[in-house]
Length: 304
Length: 234
Image (cartoon, rainbow over all chains, first blue to last red; front, side, top):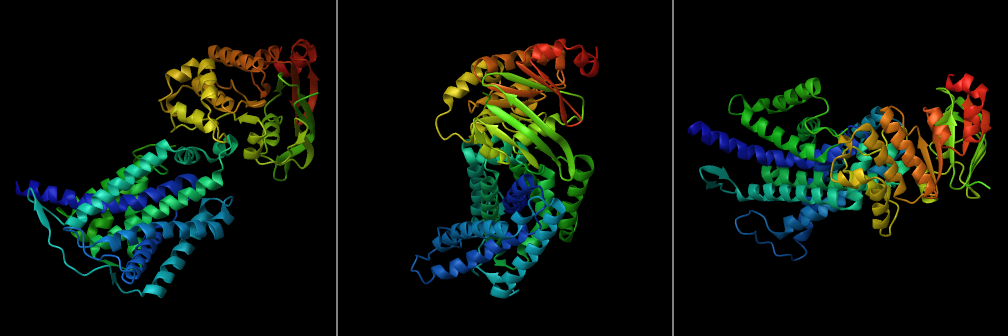
């Protein structure tokens, strides 16, 4: 019974970290599917989102927005406003990076784009360090007490994370299946050349892809900050391995696969801590990635 | 008077020139077929007409308008659609979504075109919620044509529409092509099944080594003993 309790507890932790990984993985998978390159700066886009939210959060203090917390949550309206505005701003930054950097290399092949993205990653991380210092920054410092539900400890903030991630995934699903742009995005991810000869304005699709991917990444960065209580410029870089593992597990180019992959990576890394040292969490993600690449490189949800 | 005119086209991939001055014409509401051995430049010609390759010399005219070197998505807007030889559907989208993508550039209501396509290909209606990737090769080919018809094009380019299909399916596809032509769409196609396709073509062209070798009415080409001996294998 005690083992079962611990298992359930770790499952909840796994779902929480899985939500954050999935929010990052969806964007990486979308751009991977359409532009056909592994974007190493995606983690740093998450960090940028977290820090833009910090700046916006501090800004709201001078605007007279009510600062009291929502019910049992340790934050209130200012963080929510900062989260949403940061998603929008990060999307604009990602589109801007595409215009000045990646667009020049559309015909250059995946390796050139990959290297360009490593460059973009360094630039982003160092700009973040330059503006906000390499030391940890805090949204808020209150310590929240976990609540118990059926013997499982969970903080109200973590319930918010789960609900936000599920809501974002559902909205994305509606976008991809109900709107013309969403369907065009899936079509372009299936076959870029065919999308072009069909008359789809693929440059516009690419713009939307960057925007949506970056907005979701930013939200993942902010949620990671809410969960960990602090943010550092390396936040996204440290998450990148888990995100890549999730994308490969789910199947490159499939946003649903990314969601599934993120959840599985979150669950398996957390549950592994019942058996092995916590320090091996990245190794667990790595092993899953290697096994998938060896035995089923198309991922769980085959997209191409 | 022709709806699509290709004049003295030179084209290829990078430094490699594949077409050395090819001219063809498609009359309104007619079928023109290009046959020829592998590597003769048939697909290169299709891609050049559709703006996927830029010719080094020559001119492509659609309804008196010079469309040489225009981007494919611009050419689609001029009323010409292209069905590539393979990978011509979006496999992870449903059949219905594929057809909707066919009408992507249309901002008006396209339900009338959808009804027409479903009427022409009843099978697609039965499978409209199915993932397109799960269709058989022949069904995918029908879907690819249906997708192109969503724009009510004036000219349809078909690159080997019956390649790699079961013999029974070949006949069905060619029959559909004839029906599409009868509804007023001009068709330019490249086909491996030379005999069957020349039979229903108003005009036939034989391409070899990047040059036009013969040109005549479809049936006349078929009856030409030289063509039979050199290109049709009898």
